[in-house]
Amino acid sequence: MASSIQLRPALLLGTVLLLAACGGTDTSTQDAVADTTQVAEDAEGTRIVQLGGRNFSVPSPVQAAYAIRSAGLKYNSALLAEGSRSGAMTDRSKRSLFLGMLGADMAYVTVHGDGQKALVTLQTMERIAAELELSNAFDRALVERFKANLGSEDSLLRFGGAAFRAADEYLQENDRMDISAHVLAGGWLESMHLTLSDPAAANNKALMSRVGEQRRSLEDLITLIGSLPDEGQNVDLLTGLKDLQVIFADITSTYTYEAPVTESSKRTTYINSKSEVVITPEQYTRIATRVKELRSKILA
Amino acid sequence: MRSHILSTILLAASSLTLSAQGLCPTIADRCEKHITSQYIPDGQFYRALLQGDEVAEFGMTLFGGATYRLAACSGDSDGLLLFSVYDRDRNLLFTNKEHSAAPYWDLVVANTLEATVEAYLDPSRAGSGCAVLLAGFKK
Image 1: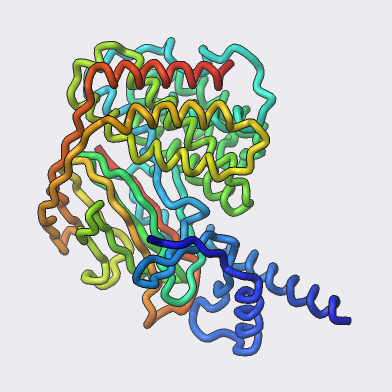
Image 2: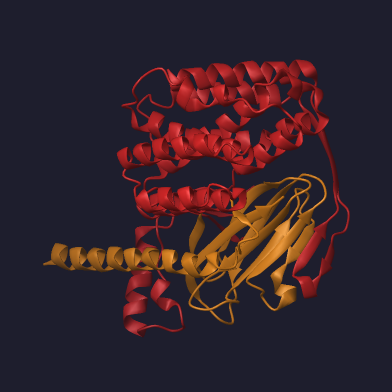
């Protein structure tokens, strides 16, 4: 069991003094300082470092949008967050969640070829991002690039992914992890909402599995949000996510390892392991209800 | 006098920390070129400042039917960062250590799995540095 430790100031100072004395030892010694990143040590004594303060990846909303389209669900612009919002957002955490939701909406409208909605959504994103001082990622230039590429789904999705990555990078480099975490949570929640809102989804095995496969992401998000400094702004979000976690805990899954095949010349590895998630209609309905409730609270 | 020296040391420490952190975006810019136009960036940025034998790790769900591209970069050239991908039972699925420390690799995923990506500096080439991992995918 890994035990969490923090790099101590003494280590920091020691490193700095050593560097100062040596004047650099290799091509990257100028990097050789510790930050406040969490470090843990596993059973074998390996020091594990979290990346940018978190140690997981949240599935991209674009993948959820693709899954919805592949399942043949009907496109419904009434599901979008912009239309569901009932009041002005003055709270920073809600704005951050909303920005994440807009990102998921952007992916949804783009893969369904609704260029006009994509543009409107992007303009709202630009405004919210400015309020969060994230204009470096969502700026006028991005809007112009979007306009110029409205007919190219792939380009739009790439621009969106690159913009969110730039925002994430900026937030991490500037110690604004709370916004980064809320953007991720908002995107995840909205993707779930878009997936679950059509009752026809319950009849699609692939989509049902995709919902069930979100358990790890949900658990990671709960850990992340739970680790943020909180003055009460995360209570609804955390409670809602934990309610979902209770339902997900009963979903069964199996995994069987099979040896992967690597083709070096193509720099590609084929991962052939088998897996299956079994989610009952009742579990599906309960998840859909909880997601709807939580989303409504955030947008209220 | 003593507090003055301490303040100076702390200032130097924080300056170097900021300097190291400031290098991460430059490395990320270079690394981003490995996520070519066929791939959609996942919208997230993963970085860690590593020293010695420290290992950076993160978990990700790889969805069945998708192809992922992982790119791993550090320092000012490719091949400084070694990375490996494990499944939830700690079976090794891929390591670039066996492929000349390739800076990027594609994973074609048949069925959804929970994976852990670990990255560490090649000890023969770097003693410390900013490690950047980027991910993209295609349908």
